[in-house]
Length: 229
Image (cartoon, rainbow, N blue to C red; front, side, top):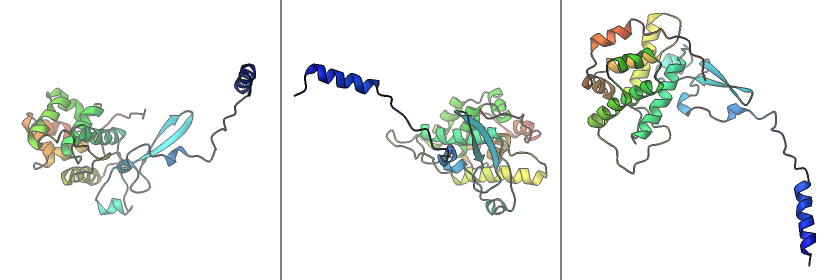
């Protein structure tokens, strides 16, 4: 049986031995790991590409929101979403989960725009006293509260009205014939244009009206460039 001195010597020898950790294989791609929900990854090639750095490496993320427009789904036409719009969409999914809703609706898109917070649409809402908390309360009043122990899916699917809002925003940009991006402002106006949507009802209950919407419609396509963080 080994003595205490021999055991101690063996342990110290183990500690003094250099331990080598293999370097990451250069063939490993960070792009293999989804950095955005699947609903945000490219539905077709040619979407806007955002770049950021991750431990010294450049990571590219294709920012394309889901659309039911045939020309876009088939790749015949291409549009670009602004980084604010993409962030707003991602935050909408998160807010839907916080509300424990099974889907992401137009009320969630409104909350996402407010959480993102830097678009003209978000500023217009705040200027009219519409905040994240008031939208949450109004949504709960209109749609009801979810069950206490219900857990939303990781990426709550879009409601029909939310999908219509995305498609409306894209169509308005295409009809304008102007170059540029589909912005969070387009998305907000799309929600307001659908009077049957929960988002429109939330805004109307908080005092928003067509006159206020017209202020945003004049500059819907204008957004200051914002570098992705």
